Length: 266
Ligand code: LHQ
Image (cartoon, rainbow, N blue to C red):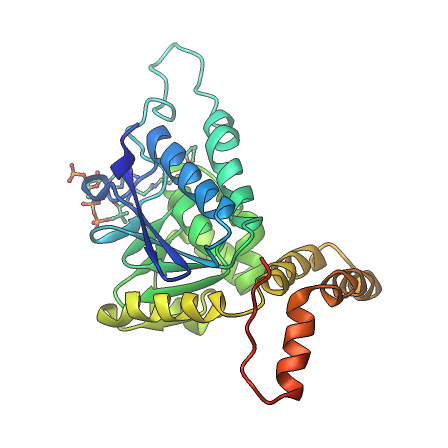
């Protein structure tokens, strides 16, 4: 496995992670999956990392699954079909779980096209910022597949059933500005401002109460399967946990003293 398939740079409390297979539009093969997961694990384990930015090298964020990978190449005629669930369960599921349970907020900086599973990966981050020339492509229907890696869960929640079906069935490229307009992403910015915007957002999140931010993600994701009363109860449990934290004491003390808080929990 080549280390350089993923670049990992530290800026203050922000870990910037770059998919680095630009010659294949950062499409995912097994090695890239292993490198990305290991890098995310390292960020999760490092208590001094308080936010992550995920981006791609070159002109794409990622073209999704590498269709040249033997794991997904259709089997030759006469041979049993390839079991596509293998690569999804072996690689994409742990990646989506790792993102959704990362102990710090994660910002996707979508620098170019995101296609197929890479859309799910980007949308699985907490905040998605995209350059104006970036686009989102539900490439699955073009090759006879369904949205995967959480696409069927994320898409309708972000844009509603009608748009989710339109995007997934038609498989048209959605420009970043339209993705912003329909509420699929947080923000579309000029290409040359993308990295500065994403890093500034991540730095801002890094200065905030990390445990509260991560509990907010957990609560918002879990609320999808709850009724209102269930959500109120879950919030009460989380508030009980957070109310016992240093950051809560610090937040209230800073408010009372009219000073900036210094949040340190993670
Ligand atoms: C690629 C790829 C690619 C290999 C561009 N693979 N080479 C999970 C597991 C189980 C089953 C399968 O599904 C999944 C999840 C998925 O992600 S499925 C969806 C897989 N992705 C796609 O279907 C996207 C395919 N790519 C495209 O539609 C276009 O390449 C995009 C829109 C990404 C970019 O278009 P262009 O900017 O016009 O670039 P291009 O098409 O000329 O691509 C540049 C090169 O990259 C080209 O190679 P070449 O040797 O001709 O320069 C492409 O073949 C290669 N490439 N995507 N996913």
